[in-house]
Length: 210
Image 1: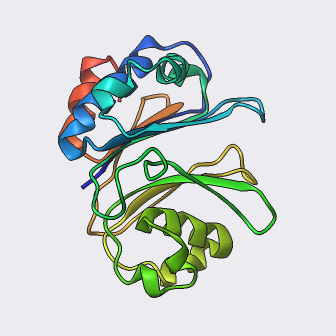
Image 2: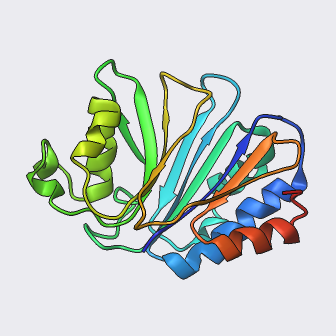
């Protein structure tokens, strides 16, 4: 069981509460996984796309220098998606941590995270090339778009960003995995997390006016 937490900003203004939400949410998400932690951040400029992932728990991750820099910019970046991993398939390693970066047929990056444990993916197109079901799933989505979900079986909640649509974040889930969403009153910011109670409690604690 892994965990996903994130912040999406339509309004790029300083907001310490949003920064605190992401940091505290990452630490609290350890109840869903301690094997690895990673984060995707997309800024305003095309070159401001950052991925940082390590095979460490989230308490240690938020003290890492690059993670500190990314967390500092959560309120002024368009898209922030973090993931904590509980290993179900594949070794515990930096490479197998989320997010996974793959290329679409037109060489655009697709970067995403997954909570769940897919079945029969090794027998699907390209499955034998990957150590982790989530990595295969992102590659399959990059190649086939929405039609990829015809081949994705088992529990999933996924969040991904496609370089060809830089201002957009994609979210998909089935009934077997949760992902809860909250908007602020002005609907200029959205926060989300795998745990509903954690989402509400931390948002309130950080002054998010949801």
